[in-house]
Length: 415
Ligand SMILES: Nc1nc2c(c(=O)[nH]1)N[C@H]1C(S)=C(S)[C@@H](COP(=O)(O)O)O[C@H]1N2
Ligand SMILES: [Mo]
Image (cartoon, rainbow, N blue to C red; front, side, top):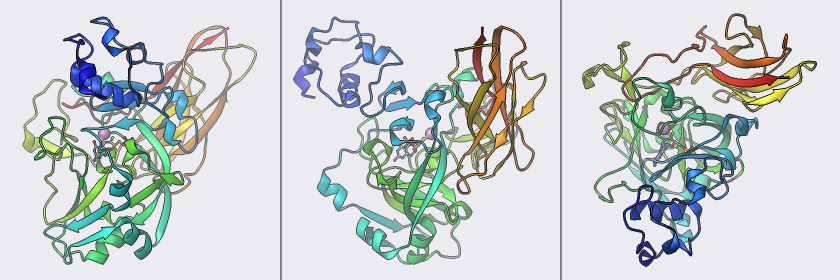
């Protein structure tokens, strides 16, 4: 968008000049009559949560437009393999705008204190030198469910929709690390990316996280160039991204251009303080927790979604209702799934399928019958293979509102 188009907007409640330009990027199109929009009036596509305003992502709910953050309503996550169009978007900064030349000449640098042979590999090198692997991998934002914490936590107010499980294709991070030589003192792998900080300061990074060696060396940890068999879409990290399934998705660096093998816990942006860290031992809600008592989130906890039907449906008393959804448990597998129609007093087991591969979510399904007309809720509860179940109430308060794995609930009017 041309900067002249910002003239006449003035200061308004909803749109600052800078958010207008990113809103235009969000729409993927110009707003020809923007100067005529009355002061204080926001485009309806921004204020109506149900409007489709991200190109190619109909139905996603936008939580923030600078940076762009949008979540997927549960009923739109019904596919076993999440299509790109339904993947939530979580950006900490401003995504790079790449020319086709820049993308074609993409280079991944590998270095760090514990790298024996620092290297630069082109996309073509990666594709030619290493074996290709495809896995379906669940990625959930550490802050998914944040909106339910009290006292509230600052940040995007995700409800349930910051989770996806798509098929990623690329090479194993392990193969690339071994090619470049892992020194004995290696403890962590960190990433750097091509997105830019919201402030515009080129010396600041929006995010630079990582994982310990044992996670980096897993079969399923990929340097990926394809999502569901196609190029990774620009918002999701084109042309290259790290994918570490089962961990906070913040570990899966988009627009990946550097990998560091570290001799210490990676200390990039959003690795310290309260970012993606929770109190090492539980605290009372609202407690100020010193940095030294905060621990980095590793595997995500057990969780599930009801993806059919949509919350708020009407259902005929005489007919049993088909329910289905997904369940996942970070690094672990889900071993049981149950639903309740009586606010958790009794639970009925569901059918549960095995995952497509380790770190993929699992499909569950069941049929329920209602005893009489009225308002009901379906509550869903998964149990992992170590016996941990989802809590009914919001679990362990923490300063940034991470790891809310409380049961998903949907409303049903039985008539
Ligand atoms: N370079 C870069 N990588 C990133 C981010 C980012 O802002 N920049 N956000 C992270 C976070 S917090 C999440 S939850 C996931 C979101 O992935 P998605 O937008 O493809 O769904 O990407 C992660 N990787
Ligand atoms: Mo995230």
